[in-house]
Image (tube, rainbow, N blue to C red; front, side, top):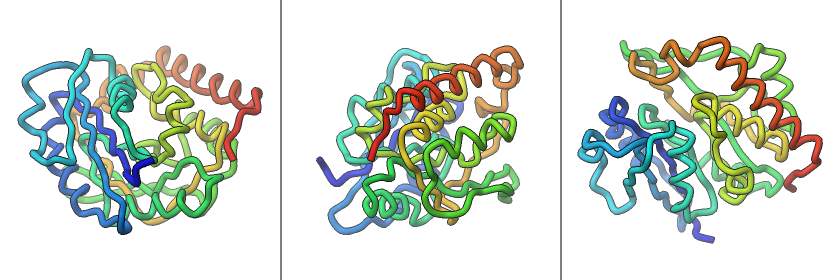
Length: 249
């Protein structure tokens, strides 16, 4: 398998102007000798509003498809993922220097680790950043830890799915992101936690942009009926995987 990290980004018209910042953060990454990255940008839809924001770089591939939400866009992009690992990078977020190398080192060192996350800071419109209390201890995250903490905290995961780095084969085995209108990344995180040990890096790996147009800031995202359904099916999937005793390593 290629010594390559496939970076997967779902984008829609409102977030497209932020692609340049995401690209700059990718270009600042330094990887071990022999490793490279390939950025797959998948538009959630087929408009004329995104393509001109895509960087002109042979390491960047842009495709379009039917609209279905970010989970659908990312899962479609997986058809073209050719590296050993997949890194999530939302269109409006930025990696910090060294983020890819730290994720890679964790999974290369231990074949029982299937996925990794890192500390995340909110990047506010005024340029400041805000962190969150309650990050886990750095190092391995044992199976079932994320689900238990997520349930106890009122459906708030102890690690951020927007910082996910995962073995490509494991991601494909779980079917990619959940077919949900939102929380599809949390659903995937819970499924990964059910079948594989994870890793948490205490160094900040992602700057999570907060802005008025982001999907998670819209009223529909917090509709209580839909949210309850999303949480229920994400939890049920994780518990079913646990009960089936299918695991890696």
